[in-house]
Length: 151
Image (cartoon, rainbow, N blue to C red; front, top):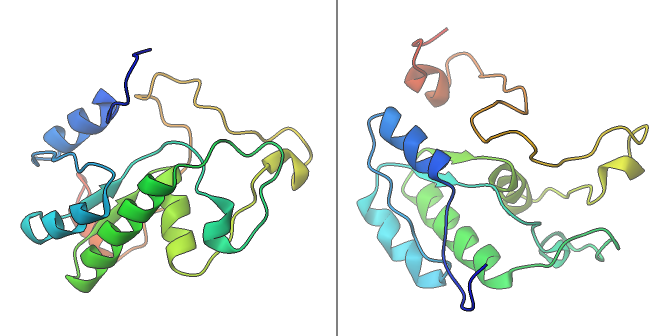
């Protein structure tokens, strides 16, 4: 698209944070971004490319995409700081995978290998259409913050 590297985020994330009453702050993919977490109210880890398999002690599957070690390192540093400050953290798609890995989990790198072959993950919707079901745990911070209030 461009002839130089860029730090971008889909407009949908900005719109959703604004709609929730927040002001989005984009942190660049550098470990030093963790220092900025002291000045925010919450952290949203967005979707994107695969988390590097070496982050969860796995060899790369042939279908696994190109890793971005700088992004992995910076988001893990941001997450560590957010946890230390007891800030709310929401992981969307890759962000949820990163949360899993950060807390000791692993990932299935190629869903057709562990399902009947019909399950893949491609974001074909506009970004405004839900593609995953989310269950909100009653009594959780997310339940209290949801637009419909606590269940």
